[in-house]
Length: 368
Ligand code: AMP
Image (cartoon, rainbow, N blue to C red):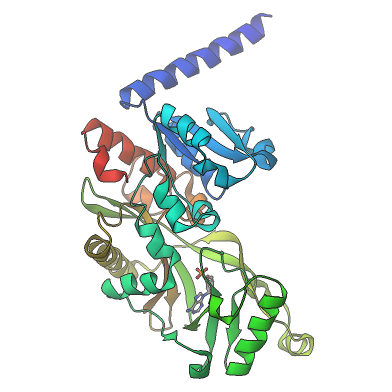
């Protein structure tokens, strides 16, 4: 049938164009990631930059990921941990893959497992340990000179409102508020009953900062030695963001216990007068990472905190890799539009860095 032949011809043309683009990109490289978190954005961005794309995908999620033509190859696994297996690593290497880490890799694997991955990782895989470990995290934020909330060492030192957190990238799951030893213990008991923690030692207590939460999405290029602000978002968390829908009287009556489980992200722009400090904080973070965790903070990262009523930012967390809030800006953001003509998602920016590094023989600067 001529119509189908014509479509096939179009597809072949498209495929040839992509091959041509890949060759232009110097691109025998394949951009690979785990099928979750922000993988669609990452692989779409990689394809827009002319790369071959590969997804390591759990069988139960294949239905979703098979819908997208920009994914060239899928390695099926029963469980993400299989990415560590010889078979999976062999295929990733054969494809000359650059693996992009994201929140799912951090939450599903221990730091030592990530560090042992054979496939080259985009960015600094050693800094991911500093994201996962609360003590290292605090050390790096202090070194960067960021204003941070007070860490409360023990439940006996609680005075004033605190937020109690679990270790690792849990996306706010299980977090609760405490204002006394008793309220801390009550929350801990609940988490133990739900088998979310083994004991109180699994918890981390931090001063609760009043204000509005803001997530600053940066990219640092070790090649141009420049920092870029590519987007800003806030999280939409259940059910803390829904609690205002219940009037105070009913909240009290029903003994509502808020949780901080991330459901999605909402775009945000800041007052322009705040932006200079945003850039400075990002730069200070990059310098601190260079000193403490060589080769430093390569690629995407996020400073996460609260602006108070005086417009002061307190950083309560950082992510040393791409965050899911960047999924908002597949076609660019109000900030990436100031820097790029192309619609520049964080995923595409990563792929572009690989392309630039490859062209200039500087792959060793962006991979670990
Ligand atoms: P996280 O997973 O650490 O990014 O935190 C999840 C959510 O908890 C954030 O989006 C905030 O709503 C809240 N949060 C975390 N730390 C603090 C803090 N120190 N003060 C106030 N709110 C916080």
